[in-house]
Length: 359
Image (tube, rainbow, N blue to C red; front, top):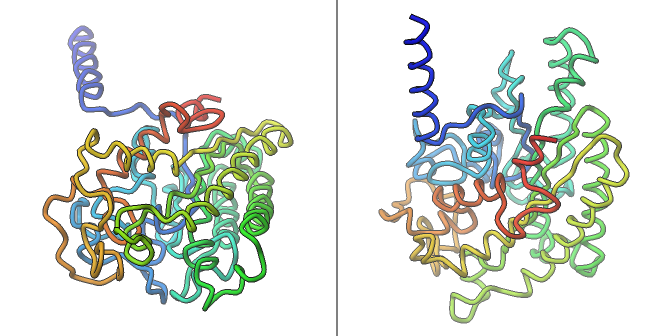
């Protein structure tokens, strides 16, 4: 009988290996960010930045969830690589479910409180950190005391992807926001990093120890930017990308600073900009036929209007890099998520998420 049990176990392990299932590497995964990683926190708030309707989620099991893609988003893929089930949004997480992690991300949210305000309600980075504080109090109650909670939480992964809306829905809209008149790109990046650092220190003070800081992608290559500013509809817009690269460079430097000044914590930078650029420049190698237009959208490059219910998307979604005016398709998210977890070349600094999970 024991022999049969061993055989069954080996067969199960073989199937897991064949189909890519991963053993659980960390107890939990906490996610902070914007629409790139929101999985439903904006569904029931007064906001234009919502995705709980078709065609969003058209390829996701069960249909629309609030994810801004046709299917999976990057953090779904990272969670799978870490051996974790679907991480619940804060809006619906309850009971012992929070012990495997929580997603706090909110579409249109930024590091600055005002970023994205023209789209309605959203939960900025500071609000997401406050929601994490509430989760920590619940973890203490579940595990019985603060020491047990601290021991548990320090083993978890914390991924943070903030900054896109501080440019897209703030700095690059001078008619609605004064930041581009107040600050040079260099000064603005410094201001963002300062505010970002303050929130990281709060997370550290309430238990976080393993941080993956996700850089801002090349917004100047999005269908929206190409539709508005690119003469040929294909050439990326450098007046948008250059300020973002300034920010990313400072975020990478922040990783060094935090690693040198926060005892028993580890910070890593994930180069989302570089990963995405690589997909654009080597699109055919990854099976992408269209890199300059959304699969689902309106106007030039299908990039002028997004967040419209019941638009008919393209049928060949796996051949598109972008799902809508701003967000990647599931096919792109799978690659970005996997390369965030296990880096190739300079995708991560000083180590990727797979290594972070082992530290």
